[in-house]
Structure formats: C-alpha cells, structure tokens
Length: 333
Ligand code: ATP
Ligand code: LTN
Image 1 (spheres, helix red, strand yellow):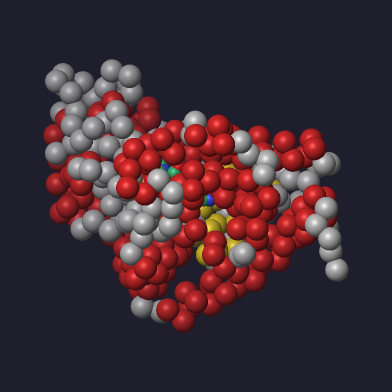
Image 2 (cartoon, protein in one colour):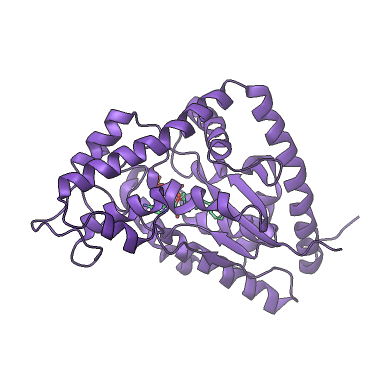
C-alpha cells in the first residue's frame, strides 16, 4: 500500500545552548510525533549564520545538537536527521522564493525587528531573508505540519502565504503547511522576567535554564524564579505569569495535566513549588545529558547519521526543486 503518512518538518538553529523552552516548545514534541508522520528534522546552520558565529563553535554545536536530538529520543532510523547546509536545494529554492516575497513583508517581521535592534552592527540581508529560507526549508519537503513554539507563528504564516502565492501564479506545486503548537508549553517564559519568552540569548543568564546546566544550577535558577506577592498556587497567566510558568514547566516534565498539577500543590507555598520544579527538571535532564555526552564521543556514528540524512533529504528536496524550476521556465537538459 502506498505510504499515507503525512510529512512533518522542523528545525532548530545550532546557536548557543538550548534552553528548556526549546526543549518543551519544540524537541520534546517531536519525539511524540515521530511514529505518526514522515519526519524531517534539520539543524538550521544556514539560519544560524544570520548572526555572526564563531566557526569552531558552530561546528561543535552542530554535532552537539544532533546528539541532543537523538538523546531526546528522536530515532535516526525513523526520521531524517540532517544538516541544512548539506542540501543545496535550500539555498536554491530560497532564491526563487525571494522573487515571490516583498521587502515590506520582511521588514514587518517581529523577529527581524527584534534581532536588528539587538545586532545593530550587523543588520545583514540574511537576517531579513531568514523567513524566506525557512519557507524554502518547509516547502521543499511538502510538509503538512510544522511543530514549533509560538514565537515562530509569523514565520510559518509567511511560508503559507508564499506557497499559496506560487501555487496561484503557476499551478499547485507546494503543500500549504500548518503550524502545530502544543496545548501546554508552546511558550515558556523567562524565570526572571516571566512576561518575556525564555530565550537562548537572554541577557540575564538566571532567567533561562539550559539543557546543559548542572543539577545545582538548575535548582538554584528555579529557587530564584520571580513569582508574585500573594501566595496562591494557581494557573492564571494573565495575573500570575511567574507561578503559571512554573506550573507549566512542572506539568510538561511530569506529564501531568494542569488540573492535576494544581491539585498537587494545593495548600503549599511558592518555595515548595520552586524546589519541586527544580528537582524534577534536574532529574529529567540528567539522563539526556549523559546520553548526549555518550553520543558525542562517537563521532563516526554521528557522521553516519548525517550522511544518511543528507542522502534522503537531498532526494526529497530535489524532487520539489525540479518541479519549481520547470514551472518557472528554467531550461532543463
Ligand atoms: P534565540 O534566542 O537565539 O533567537 P530561540 O531560543 O528563540 O533562539 P530557536 O532556535 O529560534 O531558539 O528556536 C527553536 C525552537 O524552540 C522553535 O521551534 C521555537 O519556537 C522554540 N522555542 C524557542 N523558545 C521557546 C520558548 N521560550 N518556549 C517555547 N518554545 C520555544
Ligand atoms: N527559525 C526556526 C528554526 C527553523 C525552522 C525551520 C523551524 C529553521 N527552519 C523550518 C521550522 C521549520 C527557529 O526555531 N528559530
């Protein structure tokens, strides 16, 4: 019987260390979805260079992120794990899609505005073109759905617009993708500033918990988390952003519903909640960290995974690129 599984696509940039926000909003969900979809998971190193990177670190972070994907339970036999720069079709399709994207649209993107404010010394074309490259990533694989955190909503939306624009001018060529957000954890907030998203490149390092943090660091960061002045443990992101954020992290890592989580902390104080979340997160990160370290010591294996991924990804991507070149009138031999 023909393969009827839908296609799922996502990626993370190998910049900085990942936070529990990246884990909860993105990677932890991929594991749950890998049996139901044909999955492509990329390491977006071409996106990463839109902000200046140290070459040795970028190289090292690439393998480290691959090892993390696998340590988080993503099976390289079931899914295609690959490095974006190993598939030249990404850059090629991006060029074509650039001609279907307006400068004004890109200037209005929130992430572009944020990042150009943070990197005033290097507002390069790549930073502005970031969403078009992301659209190329997704559309090359004819992805049905894209599991990401809420901060990527605008980027998936523009990928849909570009796909529809192209399909309308020529004929149906690209699948129009849907973003997939998880009910809980699509936006984890900064522990020190709970109204802002937790980010890899946060100014205050106490606000973000990194997947590489040691047990005592994790516990200390949660102990110092900002809450509020009353003492009621209740999920209410509007009036209690700090407490709600802690409850969300607890609920995701314990795999308990929010109602169950609230019940568990009934009558307890903020100190109890912070300690319980810290210990739980540290317990859950420990096996991931040790598996990641084990994988990183086997570079031959990681290279094999990337080689297989590049082969399969190139095969799928070149099929779409071929169709696009034909439709737009590129002479073919
Ligand atoms: P940076 O701060 O360097 O821009 P980032 O932390 O936003 O990076 P990305 O590589 O842009 O990380 O994102 C990887 C994935 O993690 C994306 O799917 C994104 O939506 C998700 N993600 C990032 N931060 C959070 C968060 N705080 N809560 C939930 N999901 C998140
Ligand atoms: N921009 C994304 C990373 C990314 C991505 C993608 C996510 C690059 N290409 C394609 C989904 C689909 C981010 O998380 N910052």
